[in-house]
Amino acid sequence: MQLDLNLLTALDALLEEGSVAGAAARLHVTAPAMSRSLGRIRRTTGDQILVRTGRTMTPTPYALAVREQVHDLLHQVHGVLAPSRELDLTTLERTFTLRWHDSLVAMSGPALLEAVREQAPGVRLRFVAESSVDTPELRRGEVDLEANANRQGAPDVRTEHVGDTPLVLVVRQGHPLTRVGAVTPQRYAAADHVTVSRRGNLGNTVDAALERFGLTRRVVATAPTEAAALEFARGSDLVITVPEATTRSAASELGLAVLPLPLELPSAAMYLSWHQRYDNDHAHTWLRELARTALTARGPS
Image 1: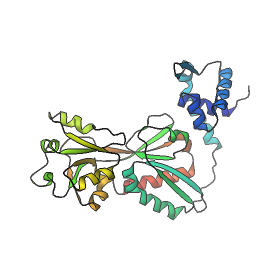
Image 2: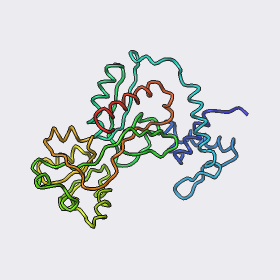
Image 3: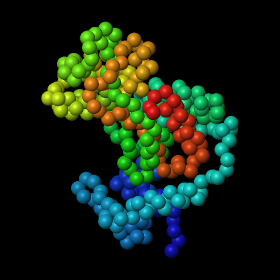
């Protein structure tokens, strides 16, 4: 029997997306075309692969058993067929889409863009905003590189830990917390707070830490970005709790005070994530190295 590698690609997409429509969107084909591919896969394997359960589709035991093997096979095929020629940055013409946390764009985006322009003037960077919900663009190839605090769990997505930074308090100059003595958990909890959450969450790990002291805080608002939260702090007595490295420059420019957090909380992690299809892509490897340098130069250690 002759092997059709297109079926392997389709099978990989179907197993990852769990639906015909999702797999079609990922591979940029029509839903009827993907349905036909699924039919061919079923005939070839003798297994249904995906079966409908209510409004969703569920992988069969066989599909679950071969999912990782399919990933590995497809990755090997891409490695064999990928161009092995040397990368010429001076002639490289390419656009990369980067979905980074807004504070990381502000902190490290300028350094990355400067390095890219200096080394590869034909390369363009598209920084796009994070969504309020998790979306599959990274796995579909619509986003080339992510940078945020999230460790990706998908087996076909690479995640690299590139640094940590402690959480700190940011308040206006002259805020009551800056005047008398050290900031205690009690004084911290007594202030009004603004949280940073692209999903609009009023609570986070700070609240669990306060509970251990028998304390609760009052969150009066959420902000979708750290930049917006810092603006709330400029002319009020609101308290913002954010990663130190990502707000260092902005807090200084806005004339805000940065204070230690009076709670024991893990440092905020920072990750780079990309799809495994780019593991052997010389241009993408070059961009990742520049991104690591930019992200770690002024912040996390």
